[in-house]
Image (cartoon, rainbow, N blue to C red; front, side, top):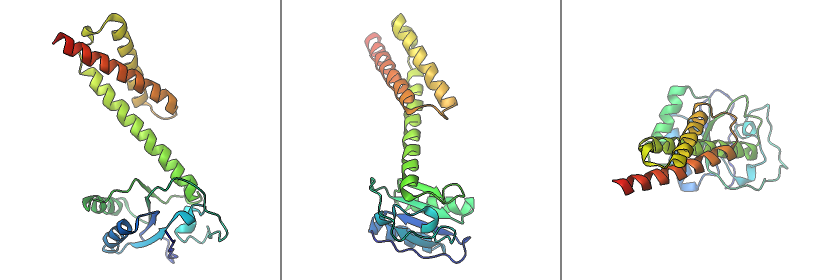
Amino acid sequence: MKAHIRTMKGRQRETALLYCMEEEKAQKITRILEGYSVAVCTAGEADSGQTLGALFGMEEYPRVEDAAPVPQAVQEAIFFSGFERGRLNLMLSRIKTAGISVPFKAVLTVHNQSWSMQQLIGELTREHETLARLDQLAALTRQLTRYDPNKLSEQQRKDATEALAKGQAILKRPMGVPPETVDMVIAALQRSVALAMAASMKQS
């Protein structure tokens, strides 16, 4: 996708940046946002080496004209700048109501405005994967608590109790927990759920 960046004269104007967006989807989103007087700019794979601030036209972050595109998996994303919370929620609601799915959504901040699109998409990908793991962990934890532990063998009951405790501890304080650790607990919970399900069906 060729980039069409509109430099913002007033940085506080509500602006949305559509990144690597399929053309038809970009057109639909643009119609929705422009209906609320939101400025829209677009960027594509060729801009992966540019900073988010540059793509929003911020003077502090000039475009690097010779920046080579950085190879990465193409991920559609939409970034917002200058929105109050209520207006941002309204835009997201309108996009969702229109049946449009965008994998990654984020807001321009002092922290991320200097990040290249490669760095930003990488970080959003990791956050997305972390949330997916935690959702799976929460679902397995709830599922395991529905079964009667007394139908398991002593060792199975011990393993299930241990996996459940670890899962609940991670859900309580997920920050800083290595993904590998979460994956191990998920695997343990899956085994315990499978055994509890089999025991329940056998004794029913």
